[in-house]
Length: 143
Image (cartoon, rainbow, N blue to C red):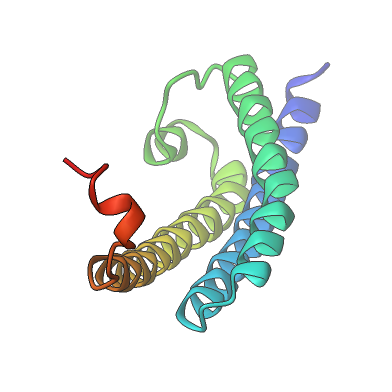
């Protein structure tokens, strides 16, 4: 495969990764809403819906790493890649790198929000459990 074909595949993978991450951001936001609304059925459905996208992203990441290696960019950060490529390649790569970086940042923010809401919900459950009376038959079994 020629370097230009590998480069084109690399840019397609970056674009696909950004699209998958944007979809995951939406799922994380929906997850936060469902968690705050205490909707376990919707939460379960969202987790199942996210699984294929997570696997897809993992596959795309492996492909991106393999293609970067073929292009001589093994282990390089996006900024390091941009410093090594031609101006024409830089014009193609810079917006893709930025789109992916922005999408990943949004995903991180959405995950943090969902985690905070889940911790609050878990705390609510713990409070309810702590305030429950232990039935008489089970009182002797608690040590």
